[in-house]
Picture 1 (cartoon, rainbow, N blue to C red):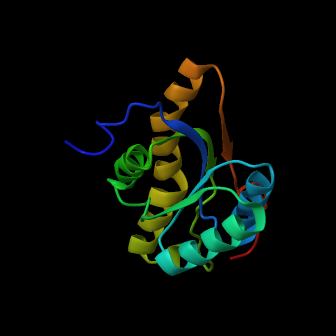
Picture 2 (cartoon, one colour; picture 1 turned 180 degrees about the horizontal axis):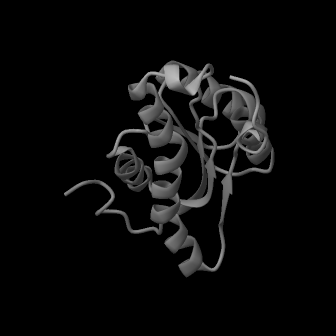
Picture 3 (cartoon, rainbow, N blue to C red; picture 1 turned 45 degrees about the vertical axis):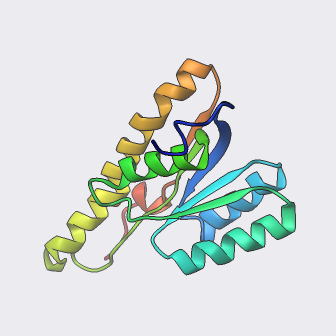
Length: 158
């Protein structure tokens, strides 16, 4: 029996932020921490996650958990779901921010790199939203924020 099965208290809400170690993801993590939310930060780089978590916890006195994971892998979403259960938390707010990109002529792009981009930028967003939105709807509260670059709306060279 794992420790989540022994819990007597209900799970607590958390803001789950993917790609929180820099840029917009980091800025959003800062804002949620400033507002007193418990955070679960998810990215591939465990060292950057740990540094970000320490900084946010020290600055705002909030609980910050980290989960190093490649969400572009097919099992990434299930792994995150399991981590939340182990942490005794649920996704009250989901911020889908993690992303990959490439530049250059499409016809010259590495097919494996294109697959990684689609797996993280599209499939992971759909998977995580499908996993966590039903709980939000059942509780009558929560939210999903999908972050995208303006490049998604404005074509440009390369």
